[in-house]
Amino acid sequence: MTQAISELGELVTIVLMAIALGMDAFSLGVGIGMKGVRRIDALRIGTMVALFHVLMPLVGIFAGQYVGALLGDLARYASGGLLLLLGLHMILSSWKGGGFHSINHRSLWGSLLFSLSVSIDSFSVGVSLGMFHSNLILTVLSFGFFGGLMSLMGLGLGRQMGKQFGDYGEAAGGAILFAFGLLFIF
Image 1 (cartoon, rainbow, N blue to C red):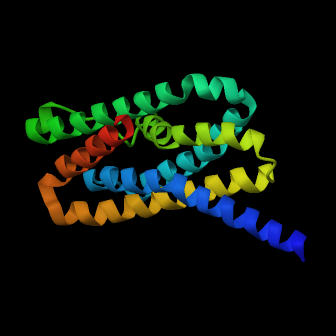
Image 2: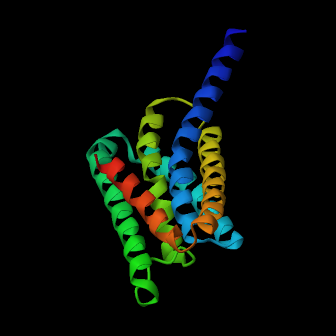
């Protein structure tokens, strides 16, 4: 009985951590979705986010606590700075019109940047999990599932909101990304 309660507690902990890590993907997905995203692009981005939410904790676990402590603050600033730049770029793009192109989330490079920016915190969690003897496969698969699912939900919600905002959708999405970049840094 005690064993079952312990395993249930571990499962609940893993799911809650996976949902918490997926919240970044959801929130930032709303920002990207407001810019306008096709279903096929949303599926590709969601898949890439899921993959990064599996790979980053694995890399973190194997990198060890020393590297995590060394890169912890740097990773937060790099991720925040990237989101600031992406958000500012989207805002400027919406003001400048067709002559100024924002980073294209439909491209492989744009999808990779987005996926990396929402998955970088999984690296730090992975370092912590390296000391916590949890079910590694269940943990990383849960992170991937919830990260991908929540990014798809955010992209879908942002897409609907973008249709309502019309031409201001890209600027609003950029403002959301910019705000989250500030939150990551400060």
